[in-house]
Image (cartoon, rainbow, N blue to C red; front, side, top):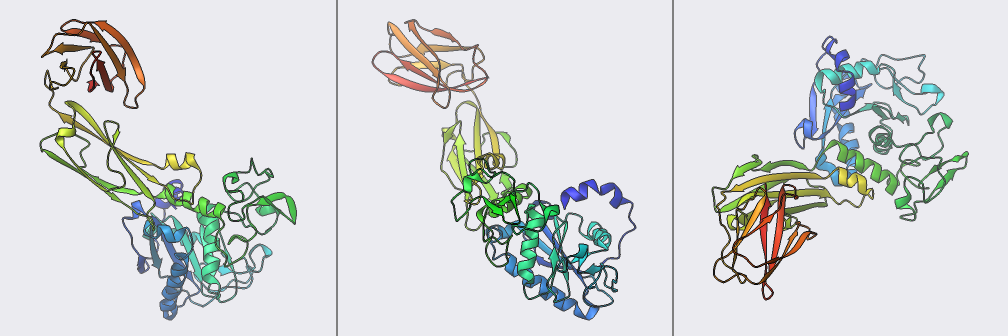
Length: 445
């Protein structure tokens, strides 16, 4: 895990390099620093059983990506398997009577028969830091068909017939900090995405999901002061899907690790126009089905939506500095937390310069010329084909259309208008001569 990697870096540097073991790539979707990396280890597999270990990893992997929301974000994950042989097969039945498997895996941890853990987990961390330090989640498959597993930084499952479901359940704990939705004991109770002492449907952290797919506030019968969001979730029993509350927690975790924007072109974010046609491209990592919203805007005006390639003529640009923005949002139905969604948005802004001239606007129905543009403090209005009207009505608006300044002036030629009070940015100047009106884009430096 990257956080674990950061806090353990000093320790890891002092380690003697662990024995290198062969690594099989199970799924490679992209660079390790831009994907979520699940690394599998095996315990209780003798050398001649390592082929079966890879089959067991594939079995878990294949099932895992049939489960929502992981199936929608499959391309966000890399999966590798490190082949570690043990001297004996299986797991111990008692922590006090370990067998000669590599990571010391045993059932009956903490006196719970089905709780399967690695008593020598430091050996796992040594291997991971040495051979795949950018791991985000480690998964241990123990070559024993007895039912068992555990969560934690090293999610663990046996090879029981239910192993794929056990592993997916345990990854709910390990990857998304989910609690069991059965009562596991007061020592496991706590405020988590799917467990709380709050009983009010209006105040509970999953209030946005209440009455959606049977989400509610259900007290644990064994300890009614603690509540769960659902009666039939994978975090309570095997085989049902994750409930909507758990799906949201998992999706949020995926989005925290991986941003959908992989790259953009041009890579230079500040440049001067040299060609008549401009082309901009994005490489996005798409959920399946695609729930990404892509919004382009030029100087605040929306352009063609939901496209990864945008092209337009330079004639659309203003003289001086222009801004092209693209905003990428994952509109997945798995998340109803607007604050999280906004926090995960990706934005790119290009600053595009078009050489400025002292007068850039052609004659129009009002017949007025505005200069200079861009301006510093004062904007000049000059009538070029007619006499100025007796009264001019002028309004300055921002790009959202909000009026910032409004005035009426006696006719003169030219007229100088002070814009000293406005911050740098892009504005629209509306001029009405009593008969005609025009809106002019203006940039203030």
